Length: 111
Length: 118
Image (cartoon, rainbow over all chains, first blue to last red; front, side):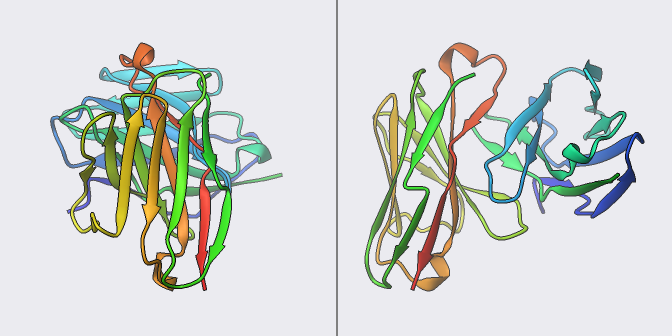
């Protein structure tokens, strides 16, 4: 069973729309959750992290966490073509010393 | 933000040779570094967790003798791919946690090393 699962996409949204990215995880003891963005051929860069149930907003980005459902999501408002990338969900495991990544969701924002 | 430098960014080697990849935290101390491998259009696969001054913890299915990891100081971890074969060709990425930002759990990534084994 995979630790972290994401819909691989591709997901296409028009410029200005809301992009919704979803992630589920298997380890109920997971402590913290991260969204990274990765451009082709580059290393991932952190967008947001979240620990507590509920929503966390940062600019155009909102992370949502539901530990009971083992679900974390990322909303991107007013999507821009520069947001086109692969979005990786990462989970800090039970021990706190292991990070597992989902397969990533490819997002394309159409001008 | 914290900077992680990875070197070399690209390496081409012949089958049977060994290749060493370095990962350095430039402006922070990292007791733990992580090594990932990524195939084209695939996610990052955790290979091992490298702990300063102790043996690395390898994920299931990763050969310890094939992928040698050394974490000799708080700012340097190395991955050596021994007796490389074409199937070892991949994008290898290291990451580290800043001790002072331990509460966030944020990982800082190196630029990645693209290995091509001929």
